Every structure is written in C-alpha cells, then in structure tokens.
Image (cartoon, rainbow, N blue to C red; front, side):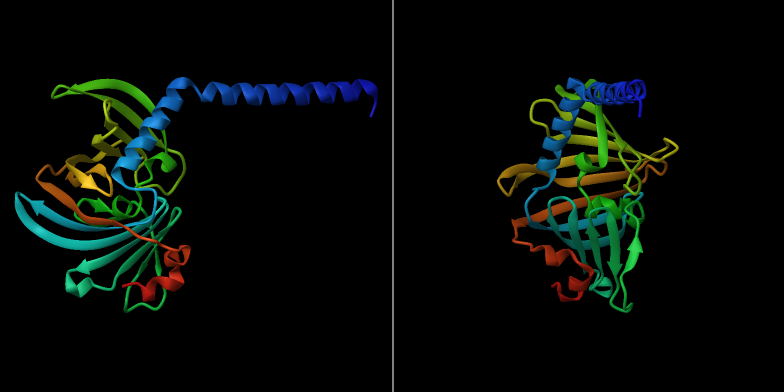
Length: 255
C-alpha cells in the first residue's frame, strides 16, 4: 500500500471512530441517564433482584361479577429467570411456565415436551404471560422522560418506554413514577400500532422483604372498560434459587 493510500485509510478509520463515539455520546444524554436510573429504582421497588418467592391471586371480573379466579406461585431470580406454577384451580395444578432471559415455555403434565410461548400471549383475563413472568422494564425498554404530572398532590415522572428488542410483552409503555420515592403509580400499555391495550394501577403499598412495595396490581382492558383483573401479591420471601431451577429439565421436580 502506498503512503498516500495508507494515510487516506487511516484518516477514514479515525473519522469513523470519532463519529461513532460522538453518536454514542449524543445518545447518552443526562436526561437519558436519569430516566434509566428512575426506571431501575422503580423495578427494584416492584420486585427484588435476588432470589424470591411470591404467591399471586388473580381475580378477573366482568361488569363487577367474578368470571375467573386463579392462583400462582412465582419463583424469580434477577428479573430474567422466572418460574410460574399454577396452584389453583386444582384442574390446572401442575402447569408450569418457565422464563429464561427472553425465552418462555409452558410445561403441561399431559404433554411430554415443554411448549414455546410468547410473553404477550394472554394468560388469564387481562394478564399476559409477561405480566407474571417478567418484571424487568429496565432490561427490556429504552426510557425517556416525557413530562411531569401532578396527581392528587403528588408529582410524577411520566416515562415513555420503547421496546429495545423483539419478543417483549408490550411495544410501548407510558409509566408514571413518583418523583419523591420512585414508586410506580400507573402504566399504559400499547401495541406496535400504538393502540392502547390496557392500563394498570399499582396499589396497596406494604412492607415486603424489607421494602415498601405494591401488593395489588389492577389491570383494565382499554376497550372493554367493564373487564379487569386484580393481582394480589402475598407471602413474599427470599429464596436461594440455583440456576438449575430455571431449566426445562428441572420443571418436573418443582413443588
């Protein structure tokens, strides 16, 4: 290579590196960093990052009348590894959902092999698989602060969360987080076509595993206002959960 060509190639390489660095720097604004911190803190309030177990009671109502009641036991570790076991009704006991990173399977006692699922697939009522199996907003979405809202005398960051990859439960989320304590207040979930699917309210904050957390999640259908599912969280406890628990081979051994 001639000296002239070598200098030209070196120039373009340095230019590309500088341009790449500038683009990265531009993307990481102080506002973006603040939005990420707020989202991470809200995630930690909802669920621990360390291994834990929690029981969830889901009641779905239509026109104020109970249409379905289900109970689950959730084992989770690091917000990316989760097992959801059906405990009621008795006819469905033994069904287990496994989430490993962004992959999801269901184990059915009458089927020899686990079946692949999507996070957005409906589990019961207004509850999608991802609503129970994955609580990692900070890992799944890119946040930015849209504005500040005042609700009942409290100020809230309104975050817009855009899915950072395929296969997440929702494409876009608007998320209200209390400015004073980073507690989530409500959320709106949107489809790829930007259609409002459902809304959620985080309620009944109580002490669980050393932190005041929401123990009730109310999810309401955006089109059918008379339909909603209420998730009640109880008996949250720390558990030592080895990685082998979150494998397809281990599902039959869970109790």
